[in-house]
Amino acid sequence: MEPWRTAIATSDATNIWIRGRSVTSLMQNATFTDTIFLLHLGRMPTPGERRLLDALLIGMADHGAGAPSCATARLAASGNRSSISSAVAAGILAIGDDHGGAGSNTMALIAEGLAQAKAEGLTPAAAAMRTLDAEMAARRRLPGLGHRVHTTDPRVKVLFDMARAEGIAGDGILFMEALEAQAAKRIKVLPMNIDGALAAILHDMGFPPPAGRFMFIVARVAGLTAEVAEEYAREKPMRIKFKVDYDGPPPTDE
Ligand SMILES: CC(C)(COP(=O)(O)OP(=O)(O)OC[C@H]1O[C@@H](n2cnc3c(N)ncnc32)[C@H](O)[C@@H]1OP(=O)(O)O)[C@@H](O)C(=O)NCCC(=O)NCCS
Image (tube, helix red, strand yellow):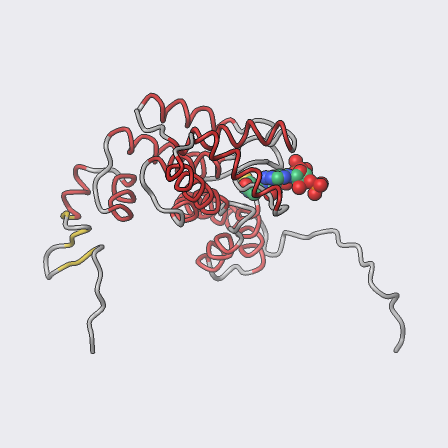
């Protein structure tokens, strides 16, 4: 049988290596954020990249028990008191195109828009304008823009200021800023959300589009574990009840 092939990690009787680096050395000299970066890109981050990825992970760790992933984990924990892993997994399963996963779709849009623009010598702002035209014509929502709660997402400016200060900001940030500005003129004010900021920064740091969703999951698992722990520690089994109005066919004896 052919062996599995991997370039990520290996071990022998007394050692473990991640991307060729000794785990014990990483444990002594690196951070968890460094290790996430190393696992995904195969190299250590620069100090600026470490700071930005760390800030992104902090910004996505939790957003309140009512956020879809947290609420789903809470509901699973409330109904099933014997499996913390299924409660955390339930929370992850709530992550998708509309919640927590829009970063990947946004990164794909940025990469595609900028690649076309580069081939034709257009600026990132002109590329964003063309992407907006195409998405509006297809009647699709723009990933990375809009929020159910925030009129301004407080995390976005902080992240972009940090990216500029650390010399990481590139065409991805310019593209998303232009997309937000043009969408405000042509659709309505749609504040950039954390997935949009995440996408711009991960693009500028060289991550591929799936990383937008992976990094959200990595960060949100920290929050989900705390949400599930609190549900078990503070609440009674089956405490979550919803008021449900039935509007189907009237009940009969048949
Ligand atoms: C986050 C989101 C689900 C909030 O939706 P919402 O609460 O319905 O948004 P609003 O009430 O502010 O706006 C609703 C209207 O604006 C439009 N709209 C909202 N977000 C839009 C977007 N990103 N692109 C284009 N149009 C958008 C909707 O089409 C809707 O119009 P309609 O009533 O004619 O259908 C929505 O903005 C969205 O789908 N964003 C893209 C996905 C995303 O980035 N998700 C991550 C969220 S953190």
